[in-house]
Amino acid sequence: ERLDREIAEVLGLTEKREKDSELFKVFSEVFDRTTVETISYFYRRGKIERLYGVLSTGKEANVFAGYDAKGNRIAVKIYRTYTTEFRRIWEYLAADPRVGYLPKDIRKLVFVWTRREFKNLQRAMKYAVRAPEPIAFRNNILIMEYIGDEMPAPRLKDVEKDLELKDFEELYDFAMGAIERLWKRGDMVHGDLSEYNILIWNEPVIIDWSQATVKRNRMSLTLLYRDIRNIINYFGKKGVSVEDPEEKFRELAGD
Ligand code: ADP
Ligand code: MN
Image 1 (tube, helix red, strand yellow):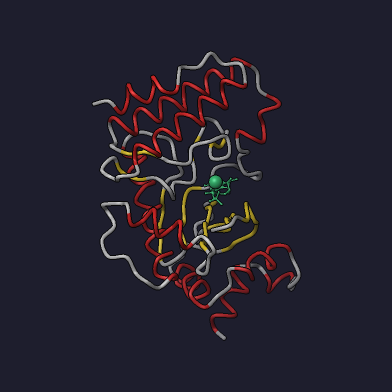
Image 2 (spheres, rainbow, N blue to C red):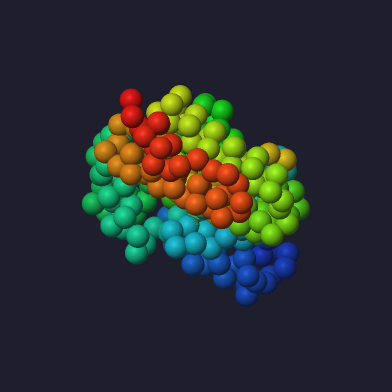
């Protein structure tokens, strides 16, 4: 019951008693015992004081906006501990040379997935690729820097109709630059780079590093090619004079 009290506190339900609020509904979906305990763990340590909004509901995870105990905004990604994506997650983790023992239990596999995304964020930052700063992870929960102000930063996809050719050109350079720097300096590939995973803020920020992996991974060339192709296709359609994907791929991969 202490847990219930803490969760109610975190969700602001003690003041509003809106058990049918959008936040509560979305939260209930990932509201299993592990998640509740993990949130209360972070609550007691001041890492999560309050979750006040839903940033996204996805197949694998829901993302919430919140505050820590110091009043800093945070983004909290909570992975589902049951998921239909088990096969895909398993395949991606099995191919990653950084991941040792693979648990058979889906919950524990999701914990490994969450930890890997945290490590990926750290690694991306190290090679000066703009990503949300990783703050903490435990079990199926990842806390990171929140990008935005009262309103969360929009995705490139959300603002594309307001952009001009010049903006697309700059963003294309940003995205290709990130792919190159990650690969050459970081020995790393994002693997899901697209207009849905670039937030537009003071400077663009690349999010969603769950699929990212290292060069040594046997899937890394496939992922590299996918990123190059997606970025070139997208910006090509927006009128940017883009490079040839095959050529770009050979240039990066061929060493
Ligand atoms: P998914 O695997 O569900 O696509 P993402 O990591 O891409 O998960 O997050 C989903 C959405 O949540 C993003 O498209 C973005 O709108 C929002 N989001 C994720 N991380 C942040 C963040 N650090 N700051 C602000 N919004 C975020
Ligand atoms: Mn995403």
